[in-house]
Length: 187
Length: 106
Image: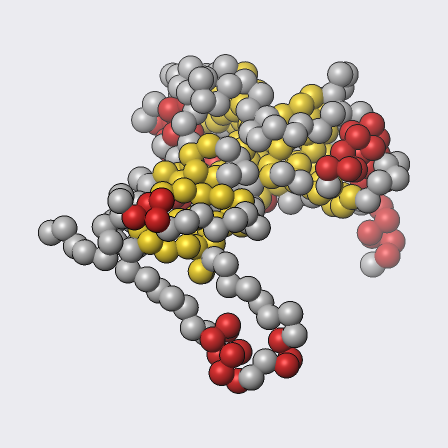
């Protein structure tokens, strides 16, 4: 048994592998794997944690901040809570661990799955199940928020005028994807 | 849909994102083991359950996750104000004019 295990390394199956929906005005596709960090820190630890992560964690509600280089972003979820996403799969807990100030950093890379909604109908597609005002005035590029989509909780982040990044728990991913794919038919 | 102002997110959000969390301003006794049975019952079980202006805790569970307090009319379901947890209890007289005052209109 041990021999067989050593010959073939475990392969992680992506939750939404192979799925893709493209309609006239909107497309719904699974996002690539990424490293994710659930970060909790008090006001006095923010400078130290920001330096360690290389991204200035935002303090204003419903905003996000990108690192100067690389694909790292910090999304404001609550007054002392952030979701940090790194597209390159960097070791985020190790990075956060360099901060000396008291904070909590939990690796949740495999807890979430990303779904990308893009196109001129992206807003309408998400509005099928999300109660927030997603117009550019109320939810500008870079805005992010924990909210609901249909029956599940999501983190919604607007990456462009016509592109949204949806973070959803792995076990809810099929539901969220099916919901968005169905909504895309009506856009 | 009812819109509720979250004092932490600093904007109005849909009712769907929130969860009711019981009566506000119920102070836990400092020496709870020294309380008499009657006093403990009062703290633990007895709620005012008013008809009209009520002080309630709410949680923005599908948003920032924070608990906060709200003043709500239990007859009309109207929210008069919301404020951060630990904030000073607003005077009920401020809302008395707008409240249904326990009387049904229809």
